[in-house]
Image 1 (tube, rainbow over the protein chains, first blue to last red):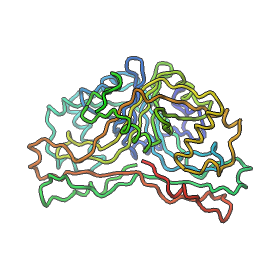
Image 2 (cartoon, rainbow over the protein chains, first blue to last red; image 1 turned 60 degrees about the vertical axis):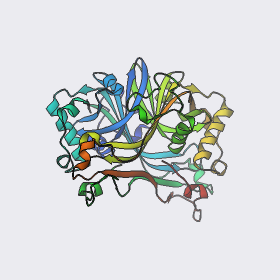
Image 3 (tube, helix red, strand yellow; image 1 turned 180 degrees about the vertical axis):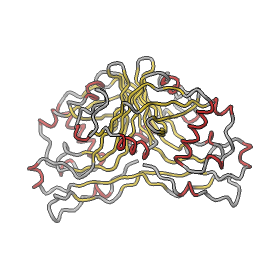
Image 4 (cartoon, one colour; image 1 turned 90 degrees about the vertical axis):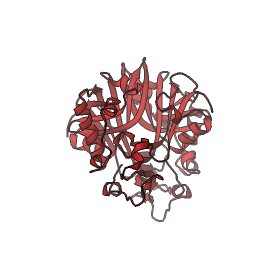
Length: 215
Length: 215
């Protein structure tokens, strides 16, 4: 089992749930683009929800070049958190209720991608990972749009995963009680796509819409 | 329309999506217990995922009394963020792709509930809001368990919501392009509960399990 890459990365609470191997960390990041970016702005904590994507041992996120979040994150310490809730764990005591989940925390200094060609490539990769084939079907990006977009990146050097699954862990003497216990599983459901009301008649969703997975 | 309660609460980017009224803020908090708590620990940002619940104009969250997160949050500035992703908005250009979402940010100073009786009441309310009737069916909480649990609270004075819904907003000239555009809706799906393998034979899930809603 891989060790914690740094002290702040080491999971303190319920550390039997901790995992530090790249396969686990990458698997969770790849399954869930939605992330929370934590940063400090004028001494106070901020959390912004955005989408991340992974390429190798880095994650990336993007937004408007006018974004306060992206500006505050550049060359600054950030904490990026991804969590997938898999279920509610219903125990025989309130105390032993829990959640099943897969989560990742990444710490480090966020860097801005400055080269416009690299920026465009990263954005293309982001789109293609979610919807293969979509980028080339779209109206091409313009230099102005690339300029108006900031892309940040963070190395996965300091990352950890925490995973819980399975049934409740009740106190041994509580198992004899006549109380229903178990798990309520939850998952993200993708519903059938809806056409833009202004869609040109006759156009149908490309395959990457129907095959989209998330969570 | 309600105004932003403070400067840091005012939504800067795409502020037509901002809402500051209690009904919108409360509705989002009540629909989604999963939250990200941002805090500063030794000068660096941390984000911890946990569950929040609302009572009136305060939110609450809890955890182990030994938790680094809860200790770092007590009497400290925090940012609590809740986000519900409702769909992926597929435009005719990469630039105009977006998400439909409902999100809330709350800023302020977290306080610890110190009175054991209030702590127990808050935890009871948390459980009862999610699963009405469950608290009284469970093995009663012990004084030791209450002592081992920290409950924090945060006023909703400084909160804001940001909501996007509807079809893509493409550049006017792009609507003529033969590119499929629309929305891929997503939602949280509750699956049928699974019994604990150690369940006493013959016990069936109480009504609050089947009626559970989330997201």
